[in-house]
Amino acid sequence: GVAGAFESSDVIDAIQEGEMGRIATSLVFFAGPGSQAVAVSWTEISDTASAQAFASAVRASTRPFTTSSTSLAGALGFATAQFGVETGGPDNGFASDAQAISLMTESFLFLADDEATVQGARDAALASGVDVINGITVGNRNSAAATAYYQANIIGGIESAVESARNYAALPDTATTSFGNQIRAVSLIPEPGWVIALPLALSLLLVRHRRT
Image (tube, rainbow, N blue to C red; front, side):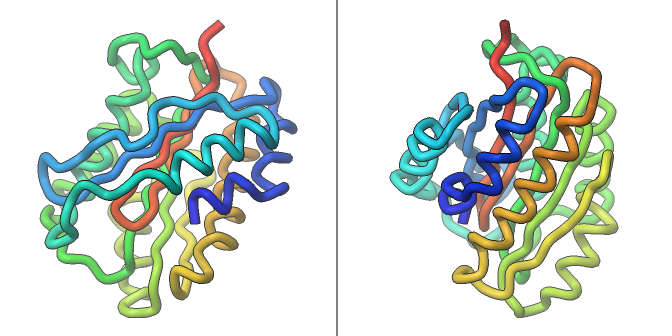
């Protein structure tokens, strides 16, 4: 779904329509507490060729963790730390006009954190400089409850939203819509420092501008 979205003309158009005309993206996998790993490091995307290169890297990546439990608080904290100086971390070579996280999971999960812990991670991310946290759920099982959970505990900030894909076959279209809308929304922010995070199942995707 993530790879297919970045191969779509809608997402590429959204990137090129932005003030900078380029973003950078990183893919992170996550599972339970303490189980997060960067799968694809920061990659600048500005055209079809660079988007295809990132999509290929996503397809070549493999999830290193089991799915017995899911720590959404851990995923949010790890994602926030990847943004570098914009969220108080070390310089990673990219500057941005906005920081955004898009968390993607299956709709039925064995959650490792209570709601207060997840809400605290969300609030800490927004307080540190993340401008928006979006979400995507996958699967019909418990999808309404998953959407309500995201709305109450995870999403927040500028034009935040949660989208639902009925199954993995529908995920590329859902991800394309979500990512395109998110890129266009944060491209309107005038302040320096921009990042988007787009996760799939047990993955997290981060997007940024290159520092100049």
